[in-house]
Image 1 (cartoon, rainbow, N blue to C red):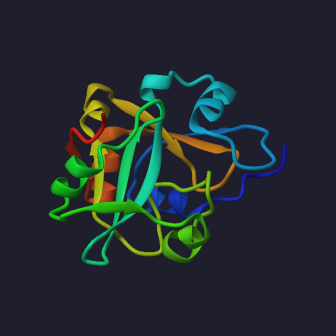
Image 2 (cartoon, rainbow, N blue to C red):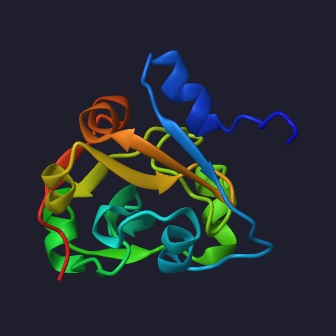
Length: 158
């Protein structure tokens, strides 16, 4: 197999001396988080998707939630001090994050946005998140993700 090309997420984790596991899978286009987890054999409850939302103030926020759950937008807005938050348009993902739909990692975005992990992440030592490219998943210690993203744990799902 060819040498794995590093993503921004992988480079940032290495710079912060975080140990992580890289899990690659075959995938042409965007697939949902459940299919990604199944492709690498990751437990669904330990697999998280990254959602980027915009607040009424115009600020951007990153929410990391279990793949089988949805964000409670009212609770998420409150967690970041906004009146409301809405998903950004798919066409804007790359411009805002530097990543593509289906390959958006909470680590290594173009800018450091306020990041909130669903409280359920705290039930695990490690969770699975996007590696920054379609077909790439990273298994990373939760405490390291919180430190590197300056994130916090909040109950933000329905």
